[in-house]
Image (cartoon, rainbow, N blue to C red; front, top):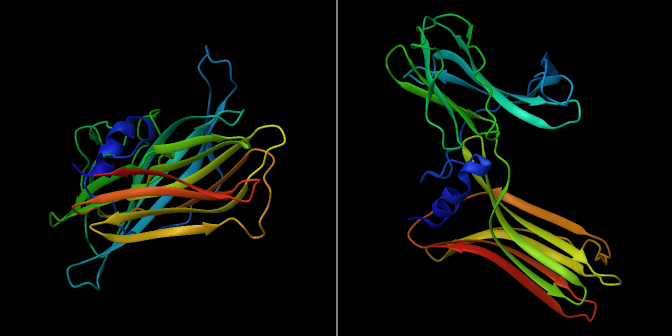
Length: 287
């Protein structure tokens, strides 16, 4: 089983990443996020917080064409909002689909799901009717197990299929390496998340000093070795080189490449000690 898929399977319920073999399927046109809060709902009587507000989180739109590649069938949008308390805590999410068919073409949404291990749900109870004009679904039931990604799918009048993703999951640690030196504790973490229809990976450097200690961060990197071919992304932290005498964190991220036969996905961090020596820490998953 693929290494990254195994790692995601262990954290999917916590962060909302679907642990499937398809790691990246780009190509969806992105729309600007909807502005401003939408509506407010009262908190339950037993809640200690005041009213919550639904706020825009993400919106993705795509225009589809007919088989001739020219004639427009119209536009479909997937939209996600988050429920925010008066103290800034996020307590839930909801999604919906917006259809704008043109030129006599029909669109029909069928199901949606949040990539947190839950099953498919119908967009309309009992099934939606085909739509030939502008149409917006009801908001989904409130989802509290993570922010997504949210995926909605359906079909056109000719039976061909469509799907859209919106929103993203929280970053989750797939592996980490921590060492304690006289200057303090240094950790590097390899983290993953789902962003719309793409899997992403990130390297995170964390430093916690002891009294009087410091490090000089030099660089962090995230990368992979897939069937012997290495790719990666590096961020230089030494611009200029700075002594970090307080808690410090830095990240670098990228879209995760698709796996092959033999894979290693890794995060690295390089830094200098007070005595002038340098160290490199690495966290990785392999398979």
